[in-house]
Length: 126
Image (cartoon, rainbow, N blue to C red; front, top):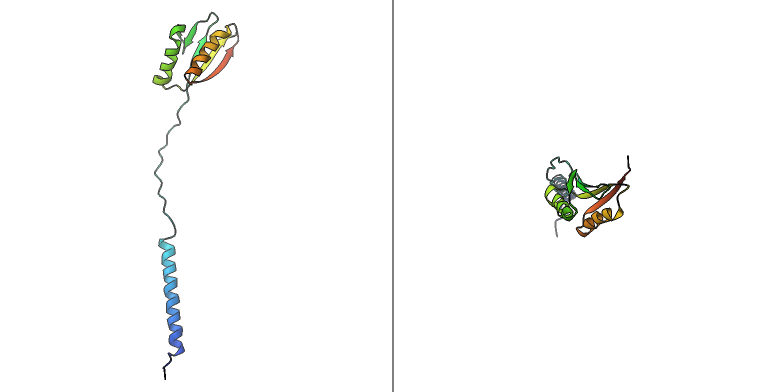
């Protein structure tokens, strides 16, 4: 005849198994609760200023870049140099109302050929 374990030993074994399971769960939840994500520190930096070159056209078709007179033949080269070397991001075209449209279109064509963003502002005569 087989000897049976007393019921209290069976209950004790179940209690030990449950206690070990709870200890494992507690350990797992404390030390392995997900992925630790470490992000790099961000240094405060100022956003880049988006500066535009000012190209001004006077009434007689005279061109000025940032206030400096420029011949029509060298206008494209000067604009490209300002964009590449000086760090400008776009082109702002200003003119008097009396300026012929062909001068403005000439500047806009330069900007379009070289993929430069441009804006147009008209200054009234004083």
